[in-house]
Length: 314
Image 1 (cartoon, rainbow, N blue to C red):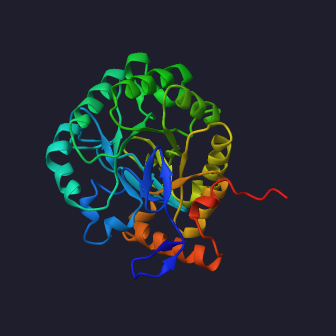
Image 2 (image 1 turned 60 degrees about the horizontal axis):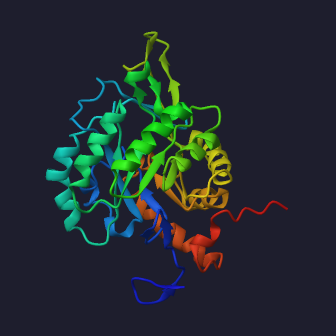
């Protein structure tokens, strides 16, 4: 049992991912939590296990033109286009404010369109203090290889993870695409290339059409589907990956309650990321932390880490 904020003993919610100690397994996902400080007025950032800032590239990016968000029956389509201020501006303008906040763990999400992009972005971020680890988004098209996603080709994935690992001065988490034949195979490739952990799943490629105008709902035509609709598939993929690798697995995909967190952990996740839920409830991450503590108390779970992989098969 651990000492809670009011001095009483409660369940131990701490977990360890890639050698990084988190106060609980709840992490705010990249692309849904800005650069972190945007949420400081509605969420106690120091109550979260960590937060992943929105994807960073070597140069600023404007993203896709609108419309780029569309609510579906049980989720959301997004094609933001990885809009961001660039790694240099993040280090100089955003990171100092995050560094002043005590007891928060910051992960930087990194993406690129060539291996050199990843390499340069990581080199810039290496100069900043206060980043716990990098989360490598490998769902981007490799422009040097005809637009094939890094995360959908084992050889390309091996190359980009190896490159990132070589240049990184921090632990490396590889965020896997679900749009592959075998995500377990891709997780194994990432592990062998040097990943310290994997996170999954990223969004599923999807599409919606306005039947009145006969036009796509999203200007990019296709978009990424997230939210409760994808959760059962994401849980299955986490289960598959957890049985294929030795490194920690961070699960995500439609999590909106503590019960969802527990489900992912039972499937094999060490920690989880909360994404789309923050769109309909900006306080979702903090609420889920409180719910998780209550769940552990009600079920007499002394250490939340004991839930990882504790699926009962009989």
